[in-house]
Length: 235
Image (cartoon, rainbow, N blue to C red; front, side, top):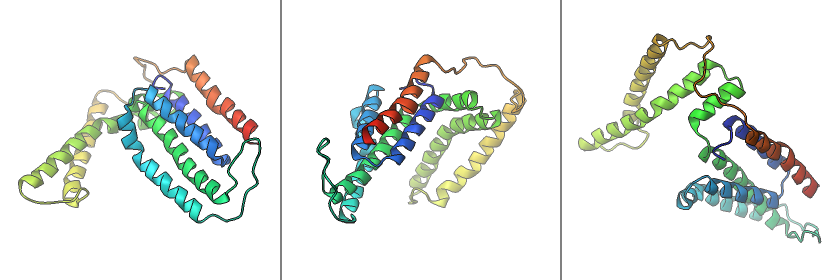
């Protein structure tokens, strides 16, 4: 998944989420969640790290299940003898809500954990024709973010050294960070202008971002085969 073009990956997974929004089937949602987990693990993510990141999603899914189970409309649903689905409408309602949380969470983590943020901006600029001004701005923001995190830790350590206790989002911590962020952005803008960066001039690329065969195959699976299979099974 890491080798897929981020723009194609975004388009394909977006179509999958729209398909999931159209059909309310727990089996389909759980299948998408399990496939997302498998692809994330195959992309090199550790099992322990993935479990920690999925813990809030799993907890929220459990809460949605009991919410749907408790506040169901009531009554029994007819049993489909070919699929042997549960007849209890409360259970089905709870599973539908919980599985939708898992499916959307799995697809979101699949995109976030297998996509390089720099390559994402470059692919949006190339394939989706994102203006250069916004592309440069996003790349510059990603470059400033590590400095912001480091400055935040330094400011918090300075308060601790003076014996002052402040909470994580205290204005005493965020105000110096905001001032320095504005200063960094101004310095970066001046530096980019002095180096000839412009939002209007066309620029060459050292490593062009192209759409390859694997990207077309991914789009074919997500945008055509997956909706067609879901429609054939559920309709």
